Length: 149
Image (cartoon, rainbow, N blue to C red):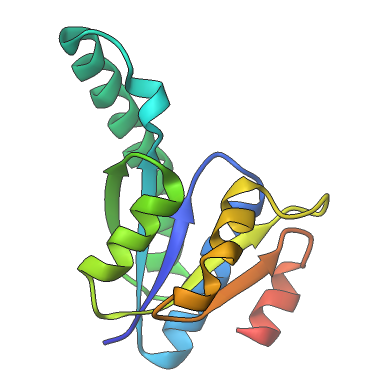
């Protein structure tokens, strides 16, 4: 089964990227892997404090993921998989693609005011990417997503 890899973060554009990935996976018989990355800069304290911060970040991610996971299970009928990594977002995204050979496409969202830092850095890596990237506009409607997925 081929997977759509999509990034989960706190941006508005992430919502449509996740919707698109789930709808596309449902139509193609594939899966959805949701990747959340804890930036290393958020966990730069002493060991005890870093462990607490890491645990809090993971808990926040799991709660955020469960909102989308419920929709994916109920609406398009897809069971998503959550992967949490820590470090530089592009580095960790590329490492995840390398670690899971079933990833067939990376789905990212683009804000209406231009690509964010993740998309910009990822596009620089495009020539060496082992799979295609789908960029989903943040302002596309749900109906529009359903038509193109």
